Structure formats: C-alpha cells, structure tokens
Image (cartoon, rainbow, N blue to C red; front, side):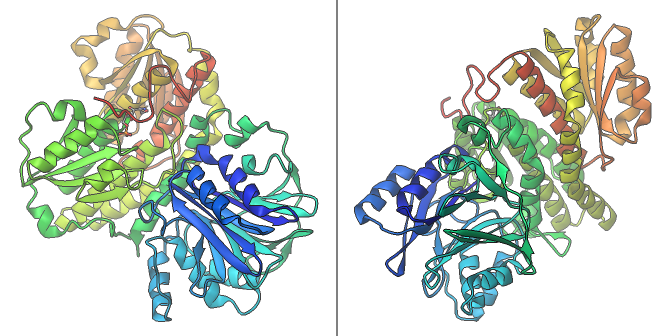
Length: 607
Ligand code: AGP
C-alpha cells in the first residue's frame, strides 16, 4: 500500500515528511515524493527509487516551508518512474495531491477533463484527482475536494494542498486508511500510525467519506455533504513495532484482514455495467480461437492458484489447460507452440524459476499473459499481457491476500474467455459473477469468527502430521492449505484428492490423525462425506470447512468451520481464508516466526 504523510505547523516540514515516510517503508514502495509550500509557491520533488534518493534530492534543494505532503508509491496504474510518482500537480501547478487507493472510474473522469482542456503527463489514476480538484476550485479548497470526491468511485486516502491556501491543507478517505495526528500548534495526516508516533499519540481515525481541514491550530472534520462531524481523539499506546502492523501481532494476520478490500480492488475496476472488461489485456476473440492449449506455470502458492485456474478455465471456456510448476516446465521440453498461451502467475514477478519458464514459453512462440502483483517487475515486463493483482505489498513470507487476488484474476480471465468464445450462458455468467461479489463479505465473516479456528488450533498444534483432502476445486484448495501449514508451523502435511486416499495413503491414518477437509463443491459433497467416514473409521479427527447450508457435515466431522453460503464455483476464494487462519494460529501456538519462517524468502530469485 502507498504511504502518506502531511504536516502543518511551526517546524520545517521537509524533514518531518521524509522521516514519516521512512517509518512507512515496511509497507513496500517503488518511488517517493514530497510537495512543500515554500515562500508562496508549491515545490514538488519526487523520484523513482528508495527514500534515500529523494532525501538526497531534497537536501540539495534546501527546501523551506511549514506545510507539506509526502508519499511513498506502490505502483498500481503506471510503471514506477519519476513522472508517475506522487505528488501530482494540477494543470496550473497550484494544487498538489497524494493518493493511496484505486480510482475505478478514472478513465471516464480523464476523458471528461481532457475534453475541458486538461492535459495528462502520467499514466496514473491519481493525476485525475489533481485536475478534478482544480476544475472544481473556486477559492475554497475543501469545497473543491468535496465536490471532487463525490465524483470518485473506488478507494482513496488523499492529501491535498494549494498554493493559494498557505495555512491549511485537506485530507479525505474512503476504503484506504488515513489518520489525523493532533499536536500542539501542529497537525498531521498519515496513512498509518508509525509515521507520526514520535510527534503525537493523540489521533483521529477517519471514517469513510470524511474530509478534514487541517491548520496548525485547528482540525475540523466534515462529511461529504459539508456538515461538520465531531470526532473523539484516540490515544495510541502501541509501541512502534506494533504500530507498523497497525496493531496486528503479525503482518500475515494484517494481510488476511486486507483480503476483502484487495479482492474488491482487483475485481471491481474490471467490471463495467455488470460485464467483465479486461481493458488491461489485448486478447481478442480471434486470438483465443487460435489458441489450442493453455499452460499455467508458477511456483508454490501461485502454482496452487493455477490449479484452480485450470479447473475454471476448462469448465467455463472449454480450452484445454495444463498446469506446471515452473522448475519442471522448463526442463521437460514442453509441447508449447505458437498456438499455445502461457499464463504465468507470480506475486513478486521476480521468481527466477517462473521467469525462466516465461522465457521458454516465449522462445517457443506462445502468447504470454502474466498475473503479477508487483508493477514493473521482470515477469510483468517480459509478458505480452499483464493482469495485475492489486493486493498491495505483501510483507509476510507466507502468501495470503496475494493468493486470494490471484484466484480473483483467474476467475475474471475464465469468465472473460468463456464470454468471448460464446460458451457460457447468461445464467451461469451471472451466477458466478454474483458469487464473486459475495466473496469479500464472506471473508469478513470468516475473520470475525476467527476465535473458533484459534481454539481448534490450540487443541492440535502438537500434531506431527496433518492431511488435507478435497475433491475438484477443494483438492486444489487442499494443496494451498497444506503448504500454508508446512511453511509457517513446520508441521508435516500432505494434500490429497479425496478419492485417492484409499489408493495407499489411508494406511497412514490412525487414531488422532488430523484430517482437514475443504468441502465447498455441492456436486461432490456426498463423496467427501464418504471420505470423512473412511478416515473416521480409522480413528482420524476431522476438521471440515464448508458453507453454512451444508448441515449434514456436522453429523460426520468433529469440527466444522462454516463460510457464508456462496456459490460453489466462487467459494474457493473465500474458503481458503479459514485454512490460512488455521495455519497462522498453529504457527503462533508453536512460537514460530510467522512472518519470516526459517529457510524461506519472500521472493526466490535463485534456481
Ligand atoms: C507462498 O506462501 C510461498 N512463500 C511461496 O510458495 C511463493 O508462493 C512462491 O515462492 C512463488 O512466489 P511468487 O508468487 O512471488 O512467484
């Protein structure tokens, strides 16, 4: 996620902005910048790269000023470079804006502003906000900001300053966090508490669609209708380390809590008038009709997402799909050709095995489409098309929110390809779209009930080996549930197709063996109930994960974690979260280093 800092007071603002942004570095970024009100004009310094680069540039300019805003950018729209970094200036240069979030209707607003003579220099959605505020500005900055945000769709945390208002600046938020720091003759904004903790522990936590007018000796909060809102200050008693995780004990838990938002961020901007519109990729019906096979290639968690992608693309778009781990793909001389498409999945976009597999596919003439979380990463740059997941930076080594958004992207692709090939009827298309829309809320419910999972984990964290079994999409889910458990709790685990257990592995099931069963597929429920009975007959303890409506599961499983009733096809995106939470609590109870497990790296850039 991007980082925002703003200040108005009696101190020199540049060092406060840089220092605050440094406290937000853990959030991940690829460029940074500040805008300072200095002797009656706005000065903007911004550049690609680390904060040290910005700091050196600021030092040279010897920037003076007591009001300003700063930003660290995690690229979503537009490559990481100087022009795309924030702050962005309006047409006249008198208004500067920093933004965290995604403006879903930015193209429509951009076309409107261009028709009014506004020229754009960046590829970002944020630049639209700077020009829009100027378009509405008639001498009162907060009115211009309120008028502007009433036209924005999507998520935003904003800082806005204007050279005609040297003693005040504006902030606003919707879906992206923003706080106000309350000081003595100074006030702050920040996207997260660590940025201002050394200056004040008294804050306002802004609610969605609240707008703030900050001066050095006053802070006023308004709703989007312009009515003042009374806020109660919150006293922060966290230490800095806790504050970096927004109060969560680990980044992994914090990132699971971000899943509802980042799934919406990944899906919603790609739906127009109820239909999927993948404007990011240039794959036509003719291109698709020329494809006789799709190869999905990835590693680890991304590979597990690919297995679900296979099921969904074959089911909906009727195109044959083969899924490979990247380290195998490139050494088996794959039968890939000009009539193939390679879908490459990678959170980091830098995994070397996956990058080499991409190059192998390109060398053999395949059309390459990558699903990547890091904008401008090697894999994204070397692919013909990229469908970005907008999960924001994932700090914990164990992937959670990135996996959920990879699935979201794969569902969009499967539906879009099916629609283009004319092999999905309206009812099925709408059924699955409706299921996707319900996923964020379903995950919120799972997270709200997390103590049930924590309690169950407290009874099993000394297990020596745990099995995950499932059928169809749930088999692919089992793979991910098993990997999550292994990589952070160091407990041995295996994932098995439910129907495969009886062909050997069931010999390992004995009294007390824990078997985890994701059961979201209506058509396979009865079969899975039989599998539960098989392992129960050998003494197993069974944890089932299923929709609330499947009451019969409670009669056979020892423990049932329910998710809200959601269509079987879309359910895996929500049903993985209970397994992520299960792995998380098992690791916490074992005292493992949850965010930085032994032997693992976040991005494996070696073979
Ligand atoms: C995920 O929990 C693991 N840390 C690991 O399997 C990861 O998914 C794999 O290394 C691929 O990384 P990528 O998505 O960045 O390519």
